[in-house]
Amino acid sequence: MAEAIFNKFNKNKNIKAESAGLFVDSTHLFIEPVVMSEMERRGYSLAGTPRQLTRELAEKFDKIIIVADDMDKEFFFDFEGKVTQWRIPDCDASDVVGIEETIDEIEKKVKDFALKQK
Image 1 (cartoon, rainbow, N blue to C red):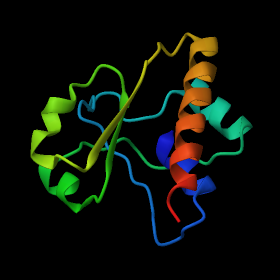
Image 2: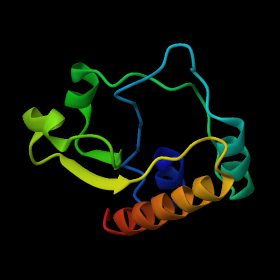
Image 3: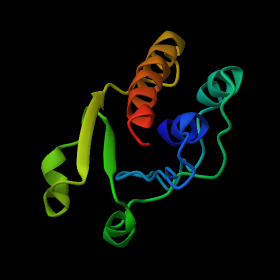
């Protein structure tokens, strides 16, 4: 979600967001339909499938933003200075209100971050 939001609001086209997860469930390689629906309703385009964050991939990034609240920032100790954690709570796919609130919070954080990337 943060990738799609950033890439829509970012004015500096020299910067591009990419996303990857630490715990990708290989039996669940899709975005929840309720999340897709809400993001599309808000004008965001979600494409692709979830991918695993690897050390090699993380090394390519200039900045790593941990959106989740349940990830220990210390996991990224080798990337000191590149990591920011927003601590946004995750919610269940059946919690439509929670999904809307999560997207609201990610939008706010991403917009603030994107405005600083000039």
